[in-house]
Length: 278
Image 1 (cartoon, rainbow, N blue to C red):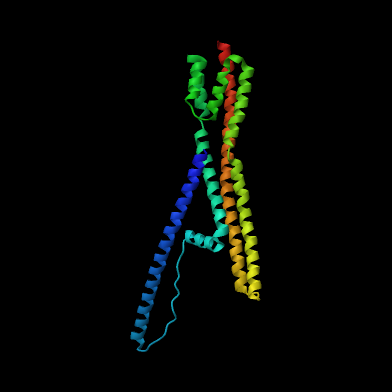
Image 2: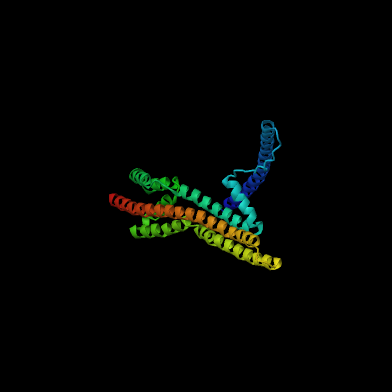
């Protein structure tokens, strides 16, 4: 599992770096082409004015207006916030996404059709006994099948031992389902903290610039404040995104645990019924 998280982390970093480099090149080409087109249109309009009026009229330079996408604005703000403080926030975000994707994959694999499994186990008990039922559980993935298998392993020790085994191993499976959730919570907590730290340092730098200039210039104050607050904005965005995934994962785990408990009760009923029929 650690290798999977590391692979996701490295892959996401490489993809992000390649995307940023490609986007920079595309932005430069697009802005250059648009500037040349605007200049050509301005020249043509000036020629038409000269020909119609017969006199030379000076027209103001046209402003180059570019409509930037959300990705371009986000990248620009990231650069304005400073690589020294924005990079840790980005790395924490990538780490959080890697952990989230790992949990999503694990929980999807852990989801089992408990009704179908109970039906197969009951049919196996009627036809082949405990051995056949264990084979069904062995060939079924998911925590519910593992719990059933542990219970069947102690089928000869009595109902009390089976119940204790099912309960104990159920707790183990719940712990596996909740694995790495604490690290996801750490990402949710540390991302805004990194943003606040960058903001405080940026404010100190802004006051240093004011002291060096010897005057409270609105330009100096506004520029420094904007750069300082950008780290907090990005930190809060990371926390909101990861928190959303965290809540989804928590609800998924709760649903799986509820199915495990219901299936365990039904499994114990099957064992009691099987023992009575022997």
